[in-house]
Length: 291
Picture 1 (spheres, rainbow, N blue to C red):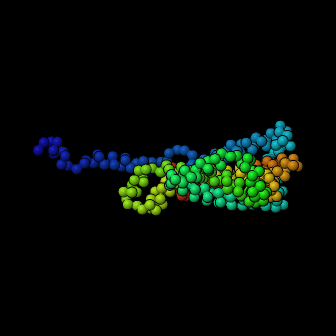
Picture 2 (tube, rainbow, N blue to C red):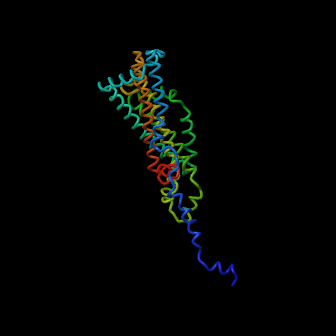
Picture 3 (tube, one colour):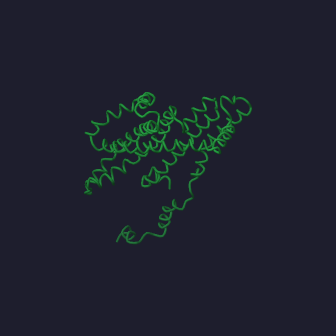
């Protein structure tokens, strides 16, 4: 037997064993230096906090006139007075109810139409052109006609919110269904999945990232539509509070309403992100990255 054959018959020498231990080393290696989730969250608030501090300083030294832009401390005192009197909470609750009802109505209709158009070319031919034409019309152009239809009551406001919410959800639902990987659909057919199983296990989960993106956009659009709706004939709501303050040159109240809209937008977007992480826990770019 040759030396090469003789060597091949023996097990691996002990020298080779540390190689396996080295391969497993990255699992025990110290975590890579970087900012954690809490540090990143604090960093994301650094710019807004700095802006408020600069704003307060400029207002206190008189560089910014109080009737043009009141100091943040003045806005906080105004918020406290309105909250303790019950006015602010009542108007905020009214706006939240309008936004929620409009979101549910518009989102449900848009989701149903998006699924229908996403699965059927015939439905696309019948529905999509009309939807895109209505989407191109600005809110302010529709407002006179909506007032004729619904008056200046709650129906007008909910209709405008539902209309604004519908388009992002409709477009992203349709797009998400159309962009599902054909290889996954082919794999489902090979596995013998029924049409219902194909939709529930492959198509809708594959379209979910796009659908949730539409939800995030629609949350912002809901408040934009509500601001427009509450400027006409409203007797309560954050928009009404802003319009009423404008009549009396209460810039502190106007700024307060703007801040409330901004905070509501941040909270709504955070809830949408949380929903993404929960529903897309299987997705490496959403749930996987959050673990």
